[in-house]
Image 1: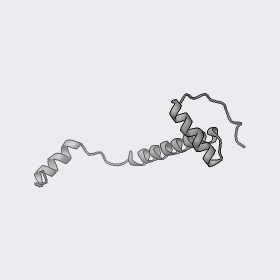
Image 2: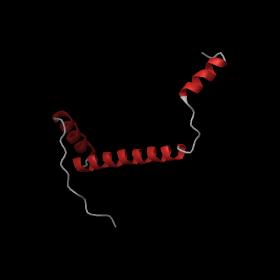
Image 3: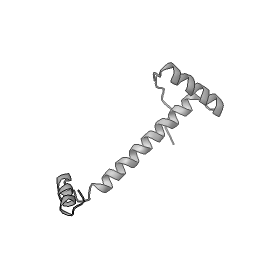
Image 4: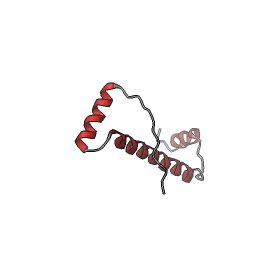
Length: 77
């Protein structure tokens, strides 16, 4: 069971607010619904990024200088 929604105050530039209101009206949704969805999507993207970082944290680290030296030795630079 999810908690009751919480109220938050945000400040948007006037033109962004106007565009958001127009989008909400066109989609027959509330401004609050659009903002909540955008925040959820942003947090989900952050969670995916954190999971990818965690997964890659076990990979062997390679120093940039060593990569450049290896490229030069193989005649790629």
